[in-house]
Length: 121
Image 1 (cartoon, rainbow, N blue to C red):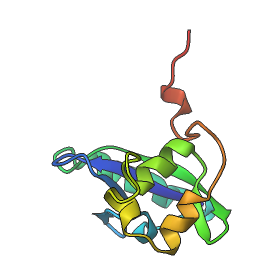
Image 2: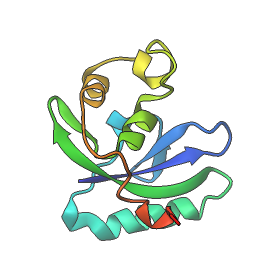
Image 3: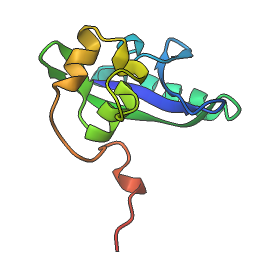
Image 4: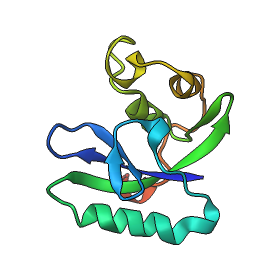
């Protein structure tokens, strides 16, 4: 399962692709299974064609967790929850099933969708 994410250019907010638009909540994101890889690439391409709206769209891998789905990558879970400085700030302050699933997810420390961007010497 995958979703597409980016940052909104106007304020840096993490956003997710949903049916031709960008939404703020991870729980509102459009989910793509493996049979829809072409649609994932089309969503990323449409995002890249909107340089005055969002920055750096890319797909993220999702995995089932207790209570729903969560990004595989720790980094992407943090982005989906909002700032980590205080649980009463950002998206995590909203609460609900999606937020609880993200809080209790565990997994990889690195984003599998962006490994090619990491250069190590």
